Amino acid sequence: MQVCIKNIRVIDPSQNKDVIENIFIKDGNIVTAPLTNNSMKIINGKDKIAIPGLIDIHSHLREPGQESKETICSGTKSAASGGITTVFCMPNTEPVIDNAQLVEFIIFKAKTEGIINVFPIGCATKGSKGTLLADIGMLKQAGVVAISDDGLPINNSMIMRCVLEYTKMFDLPFISHSENTDLSKHGVMNEGINSTILGLRGIPKQAEEVMISRDIMLAQLTGSHLHVAHVSTAGAVDLIRNAKKQGINVTAETCPHYFTLTDDVVRLYDTNTKVNPPLRNKEDIEAIKYGLLDGTIDCICTDHAPHTKDEKNKEFDLAPFGIIGFETLLNLVLSELVYTGILSLTQAISKMTYNPAKIFNLKGRGSLIQGNVADITIIDPNYIYKFNEDNIISKSKNSPFIGKTFKGKVVMTIVSGRIVYHI
Ligand code: DOR
Image (cartoon, rainbow, N blue to C red; front, side, top):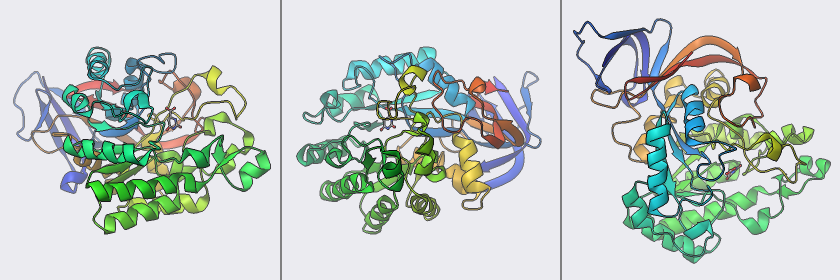
């Protein structure tokens, strides 16, 4: 199968490219030479933008065990509609992904039912309980791209040290869910004036920062690659910036909700604003934006965390933490970072394509250079649309952005040369 995307504005951060040209695809890969076959499919790229397919390194696809929230099938369809061509899925499923058989199950399901690339992340500890190490070597052999107990921290520092020693041995990044549960216990939102007004128990920023400090120290001790998940505070950005300056092997990600919403939105007791770590303050948003600009924060991901209506339709205290994110990722990046002039389009796209591919060693992805897999996202930058519950493709609807109008939309998603989504 041969495809030509004609006269499209191509933005490829890996080559610092921003030009109008044709993209040629042959047998699922990007090729440079013009094709000379009559059966070639032509896609008109006029007034559209082509970027490398988005890589979302943090999501919860909920399969196995929580299929009422999401499945690999529904989750990958939702992601494709958001322009995502590769997702990493966290292992906090039921059961958790702490052995090779379950990794193989995810890979098999993704191949048979998924419509985009799915790369599993394996647990650091057995049952994600933080006490006994999972078989990290076997998980790697089975195909995981990283190790994490996301959703839960590893409280015991000796276990954490051992996890880092093993992830280093098997050349895998460790993704830390940085939360000191002694400090965050029973908390349901950011600690501050709003939690006081609402009468809800708060989670101090220090719950995140104490753990990041420890993990940076242990990364220094072991020389392992520490990737800090869902950065939400200004203090966390400073810690990571300083660690990078010292040459410690640390990378970091944040999610759109941490640079768009403050805990003011919790005031309506909307459980769709309940997320862990919680939404913070204006100064944290500013620091995160600056951290994205100066390179302290390498990646933007979704932490897509679907929960059913029944689960979220509870008192704030009782509802689960989590926000869906696949279908608003690009829009929020465009509206909050690009249209506001904080990042150039190239810088912003790099955080969702080239950087994650480089950090997680995804060969042949994250860039549109010749020979790479043809994972491509096409955007119509002038398309205006309202994000309604009715147009959400994910099984779950727990988004605080419902009702928001966006400019710019993914109009086509291509995975290995195949169109998996178009409007
Ligand atoms: O809000 C969150 N939801 N944060 C996490 O760390 C886990 C996630 C989930 O699995 O629902």
